[in-house]
Image 1 (cartoon, each protein chain N blue to C red):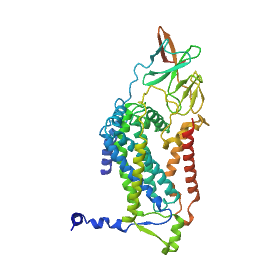
Image 2 (image 1 turned 45 degrees about the vertical axis):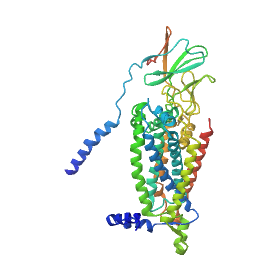
Image 3 (image 1 turned 180 degrees about the vertical axis):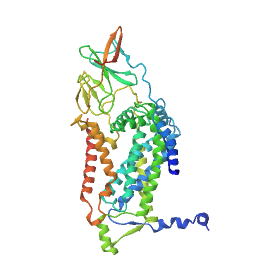
Image 4 (image 1 turned 90 degrees about the horizontal axis):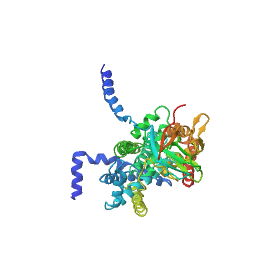
Amino acid sequence: MLGGGFVATAIAFVYPVLRYLIPPKASDLGSDAVVAGHIGELKPNSGKIFRFGSRPGLLIRTASGDYRAMSATCTHLSCTVQYRQDLHEIWCACHNGMYDLNGRNISGPPPRPLESFEVQVRGEDIFVRRARES
Amino acid sequence: MSFLQKVRNWLDERLEWDDLIEPLRQKTVPLHRLSYWYFLGGITLFLFVIQVLTGILLLLYYRPGANEAFESVQYIMTQVQFGWLIRSIHSWSANLMIFTAFAHMFSVLFLKAYRKPRELTWVTGVILLFLVMGFGFSGYLLPWNTLAFFATKVGTEITGQVPLFGKPLMIFLRGGEEVTGATLIRFFGFHVAVLPGLATLLILAHVLLVQRTGMSVPPKLEMGWKANPGAKREMKFFPNFMLRELMAWYVALGMLGALAALFPWNLGVKADPFSSAPAGIKPEWYFLFMFQTLKLIPAKVGFVDGEVLGVLLFGIVGMVWLVLPFFESDDPSRTKPWISGLAVFALTYMAGMTLYGYWAK
């Protein structure tokens, strides 16, 4: 009886503390589509990091002038990747992971491709949105 | 009667002071050609005290928070008189402390000082080593610079790879899904409150265990002294060994001061969560062997992701390391050679991978 009381008291105090340690979920408002850049901002064969909700995205203008966009978070250990003009590939400096221009992991430790986004050019703005599930 | 003598008598009348320090007078330290390895634990403790003192000084000006941390460290280094020196001593002392803690651990392994009855001394020591690395990891983020930001991102992501409870643990450490100002505040709390509290308790336990069980001697010597007690050589802990230890601390202090003054610690560039990881990014030297290993493990090993395998392997090795003395024989004439072999392998692997990681592109 006394032991049960102590256990109940302990639970009554420990449970709120454990819940307190877990941070509230942050709402990721308006991250479905963003303006990632503007026409003329990127030269062919270059890339830039843009803010996609709370995470970084990568916008690339290929040597042929196409725009591509994908998540900039490396699928290995979450470093932020970058476009390598000299290699025409996407590179993660942390553990030397490589992706092609479609975000496919081609060498190094990354286990999965980068999440790719849809790119739409409207007027002067380059819009990026999450690719719709097919 | 001198003033000091009066104080001493006053204390003795109330606290029986002489009885309290009597064990210190009785304590002896074995004297042999490897005795100098006994200094390493004390030097580590001395550097920990330096860390506490300089840490308190830094707290006078440091402000945690993504918008203030970098600027406050910059302020300490450029505006506060000798601020650069205090921060440099804190950073150098942290690195030296980790080095001496590792050196102390390997010396204990090679001298087989972890054997019965010192298993718990080893266990508390290994936990302290993990805590010291936790100090390094949490403190590294506090200036909120680019290198620290990505090191924390990778380090906490590694925690997230642990099966079952990894993800909740990562969110707990980060204070959310991503590394943000919330992470910085949490790491600050770990660094200045949680870890020092735990470390102080464990240091007390570790030192008490050392006092209780006495200093170990290598197995061969132990057998030799048992067979021929006349050959046994010792020195008094107080004052003989203590004065030698103080000299070692003095040398450590001199080295620390010289390093801090001649090679002041850099601040780097303020962290930008929306920039790419810079080329050539590497963690601090004491995490480099793990970093390089994770770099070399392929994306998939069988059906398991490479990084998950790496994290699991390091976790298993860490746990085996903690309980290593329990595999050792109680008899000094029958010590297990594989434990020494494992120690040689671990040291070679860590040193090799660290150098490889340092020079690799």
